[in-house]
Image 1 (cartoon, rainbow over the protein chains, first blue to last red):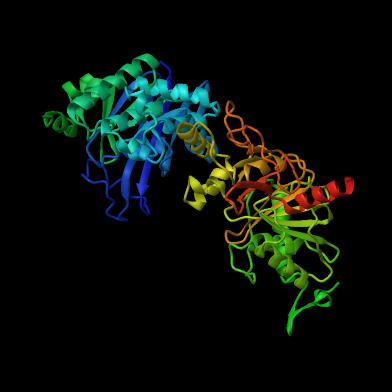
Image 2 (image 1 turned 180 degrees about the horizontal axis):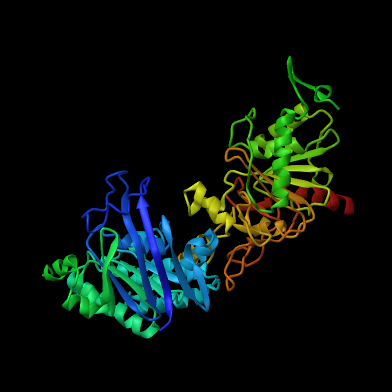
Length: 276
Length: 299
């Protein structure tokens, strides 16, 4: 198996930071707030490897740093220290030493992101088709006919009625907005998708259909995914391997089945047993 | 010559240096103009001094023109193609007052510097002529990105996808691109400029021209340029060609002509006559007059 993403000791500290920050925070101290300088340690020394075609789950409670981690990988935020290497088309891109234009190029054409809140991933002032057109235009597709055809096909694939593709996404239901976001993320054939709490806030039947859609697309396209969630059901359905985070640290990682059936860390045990 | 030697009497008791602006201001303007010419399409910031007219009435164009004018120049000022509108006439009078030696003209071919609002003259400009535009909104990205710092970064990396999204939305809604003026135009393969509110008809004149085009925005404090023999390509899709105004009659399909000079290849203004009938006339007054003179001479 070939790696597509290697993350080494990624750390993000919000605040001034001090030498003691990493030593006085974490699950052992039951806080991510440094008592010396008041900084918040969002992510500390996170390392992981994602293989080609693999779906990796990142699980943890609110504030555990899972979204922070993914945001850095999508260049929405800058890490305090650490490295991440994205292996794409025979090249190894050192994500955080690229310049602004190179980062945007990767983000716009080789990565896809689906946010929990569709207003972050979509422009509500342009039509659903326009949102997909924007990604295609970023990857230098300048034929109106081709853009139109691709957008129609993508929306059909994510079960958005083509008749509504010229409507503003603000008029859509939450589930449909999420499907437009997924279509947009898929539009450039990116080999890496980052999904941040994609089903949170949707009702159960819509959740199930979104998960089915993601699984189906993953099987057809073979895209690698990082799936951030606090929902055990999502982890069980989508992922083969899972890491568990708490207070910015990765406290457990392994096969999803193994973690759900035989959790080792105390927090994971609590998490699994508290599932309804 | 020392600046003091070129002092001109403008009003009773009011003394100004040649071309109204002090020498430091003109030097700064010229440096910005040089930079703008060196980086075609790049918006260069400058100080934008107070002018004796309000911002929004052509102060950017005036400052660029004042920085260019020397005592031997001949200057023409047009507004929507006309030399006799209040704005154009007042600016021309101002140049005559503050730039002793500069002659004003109404004829395009006589002018060495032409300041314009909303039009490019019909008569092709020569290499020894400079066209100065008055610009209300210098940044084409302002419609898609409100944050100025982000816009400058977007310009730097030629990140213009969102301008094309506007075109896409136009095509979806109207089956054509509906931008009538200020058409985003890519200069020398990188920067996209707002060519000031010239009609689509004038945009192709920017491409590989013999003359220098300078753009001055007074309120927004930016100068940019399209140098001679530089590519200027209006943005469009590969399968949706850029089209200029056709001036065709919807019923007959024939192109309207100027009622004064009969021109069938110029940009036309549409009026209603006293009976409420639609009539058309060249927007470029100097062009229309020149054609009339030629027609009279031929008779």
